[in-house]
Length: 296
Image (cartoon, rainbow, N blue to C red; front, side, top):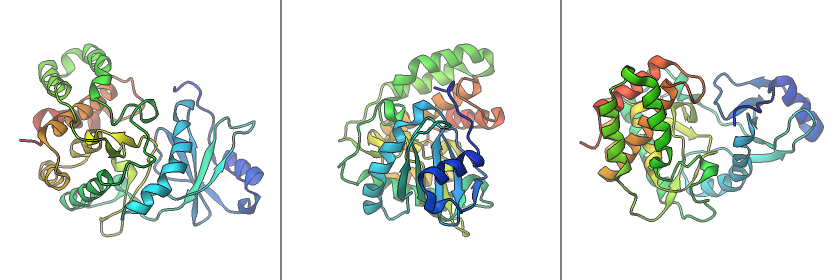
């Protein structure tokens, strides 16, 4: 999935826009400061953004987001990306791409002095509302969501391989206990909407540190909402984790699976098999996962 990455820069975006959407050809193009792994995003003028998949594995999200985002926007109070147009592949870029309305706000990762407990309450309210959205056109969890919304045991082999690779660098018995608890639990409710990647890079906040938008629904779908709780360990501190727990109103088994999702991601990142990242940060996440089940 990561071997067919095209060169994506502002010049490419200018060419794509000029060729396919000449009405915007004179608008300035600039790369946004914070980039994700799955897509590259550029600001187009003052009111638009361009989003391009970085590899073939992320292409299915383009059509999905163009289809489901307007539906979700009708049911959510928090702003989400608004599709404006879909671009086609051409000679110098092999994938479909999208144009959206620009959402104002700062990426949570870049926002200073955020009240994490207040943010946890904001995020929890959005997740409750998202779970309440009628299933409608929501696709069942699967390959398109990289199995977010399915059971975390899909990644059992990756967890074992990462533990083997990391050896004495991690507390294997503690990791295995967390994973075993996650693997032994199930979502017994009806399928519900999940975002799939509730991460600091996908949350926007206003000048007061309040949640102002949720972006990047590329891994969204319908299934088990446990995957949407990993923010508890990746960004929140212990008091804020309790706020999120109380706000989302989900059972202990769901929190056990959420902890399994967070464990999996931190392990594969530490083992170096899932893209770039700061080992210190991933180690801190793993430490939090092992120390705090949140459900207790």
